[in-house]
Image (cartoon, rainbow, N blue to C red; front, top):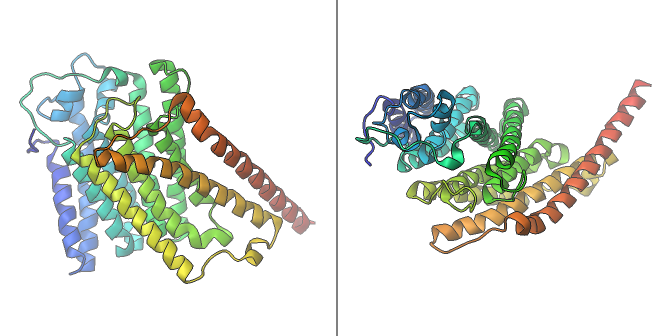
Length: 396
């Protein structure tokens, strides 16, 4: 089905075109680049409610409406259908990314605008290739996939994709050298949204799908846990670990793009409503590009010898404990990331890849992650006790 003009596609397609022009303007005029980038994001944000309206009104000329909505759906399920499709969910992510980028772009300038715009273009291109803006001659709708026909299709994808977008923008802000007052609120909001997405998804899987529990170690579930670990590690990488926040942030960007790919690639045996496509290759390519940036930043860090000095880490038991907690969280993040990246790359190459799920997943993932959780929790308790002790001494 071709991409075409429809009242719901005009603004997002104009947004994508403006984003490409802004990218071309970067080497010529930085100020024009920044203005066009903000205009592109504003168009994407403005176009989202119009896009949702097509689902509410059951305008089957929009292919995503024809493929995911029908007259028998309630208003809530029509709303959920607007972000349950392969392309429409990526447009939701893009709109959330644009909203967060607009909030901080003026303060950070081109150092933030350029990478954020590049990710925005990748997500919008993926949305386009996955049919978000395709038109059709259909006169009726197929309705939601039976796996998605539940009230939980409204809050779970919304919180998850919004959390992913906030995590990505916060991470890009860190990589751009933004002060903590700018990126930490976004990271905290991301942590809250992704936490809610995990909890809602767990309850949905238990109550509706009957998968045998709240958690099945499915690749889509693990990918969301991966992003949660990345954001949590980023929030705890302070003090002596602060030099490592930039490569960790770049890896978090990679994890978000990887999570989007895993969700929409068909890699999951349980989330069978998804399937491979060219748009998903764009997402994985973005993930690999961000991984390359993380490795480059790490190499530069080591070349400048900006690593953690033992004397600095061991200034007090509290700082040591916080460093242990942050490093443990980072190790858990890298562990889950690495278990998803290789199978994802193999699927793109046309080779079969499996990831352990259910009982096999529990045996594979649970022991190291539980050990890491216990270690990080104990370290945080020690850190909190140290802070309390120092505050008590100071008070006296």
